Image 1: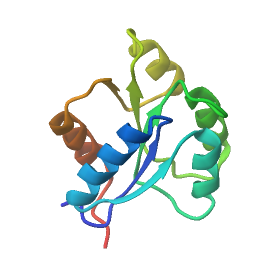
Image 2: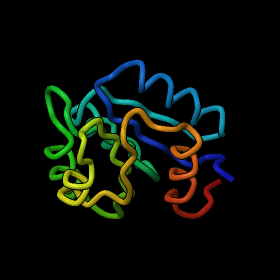
Image 3: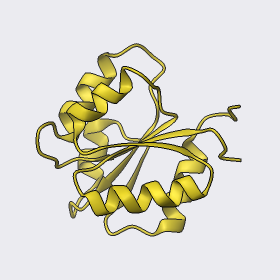
Image 4: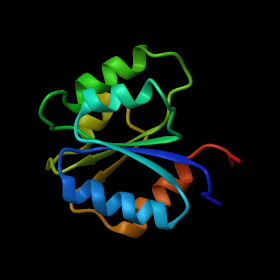
Length: 124
């Protein structure tokens, strides 16, 4: 089950962050959110997510810059699900090394399925 698994949502769209936070929390996930890559890196100083949901195009620090900095942190690294409104989400996903791509607008059931599949092990 998802109980205790940690998800980090990194997206500059507050409505998306709030909706996904609500949906994942309702499923038993422990959720942290950040409006950009810089804020996400600051959160990573105190907690390690099991899965990261990442937008690519954000102000302050975009998804590409976040991933470069994240990969320099000590391992293990959480799988990244790329949330992208770009028409060709596969190109940024391969550049980033994302485990999966979910184009915006996305289906909530598909999002929940991907997070459950990519969250390693059972915690707690």
